[in-house]
Length: 372
Image 1 (cartoon, rainbow, N blue to C red):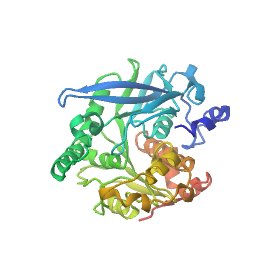
Image 2 (tube, helix red, strand yellow):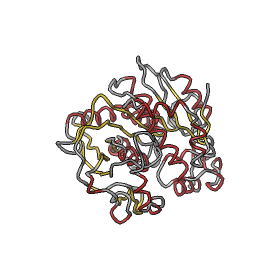
Image 3 (tube, rainbow, N blue to C red):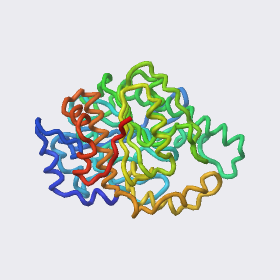
């Protein structure tokens, strides 16, 4: 995050210690400083080397270093030389313990660090969070090719889709088999959740078909509905879960990529305990880092072919809610869902039983809690 992190001051650090046992507030930063490491995981079966980002609770002597810009991690992404900050300390010493594990699955064409605002927030509350660059990023045979004809393109897209859930299962196997952080910091195999955005949201909903270790799902504006616009990946969902996997849908009111009607369809089909909350005046990019910059960059891109309709359909960012409001929405509700399901935390369960709309309105965030 380039713009948002610089606003954090000593006051933000003080707020992280404000929580008490009788005051549950999932929207504020947690009590742990956050560390981050990059590892490489080799899938010998598919002969692919996956870069993975691991966020984890750091030792107390790192307190405040993840908040201060001068000690935060700085990284670049493949598509840009611009530097990005994330609210974590690179290679920080870990706080020993056993923690719930959350896997994050990024959108199509994205990368593992597309939502550091969310991954670091979860880790500050005592979760290990892991994300890899999915197969279409690391496997040359799955990369987009200029001048690609219809038949090879269709085959490539089918392969991209077919590899997404196996990527998630491989990451889980790797993290639970090998020490993700160090010998004294472990992931609890009985407390595993998944969060995904867009194509990653589809993966979060598809994975429970074949992955029994997943106990909770948060789908951020997921793909997979039958109401698909031109150029959107042709993914479908079977929802063959065979068990209750409590699911939270967090979606955007003005999403032009994956409109609200499709979110309602997926929600109705979900065979589990479920909630759907809609962020007012938000589009698809509101679940990413650097919302304003990414939204306007996409809106000004000269799309051709099947996606030529997209930029004209997007509203200017000035007509939509802010990135700060969107991040508050996703951070607080995702954490609350994981706390309620994985940790069975009564305060989190009571939060969802209360007035979610009023709770968010008190933070200047306008939402609609869907009541089917």
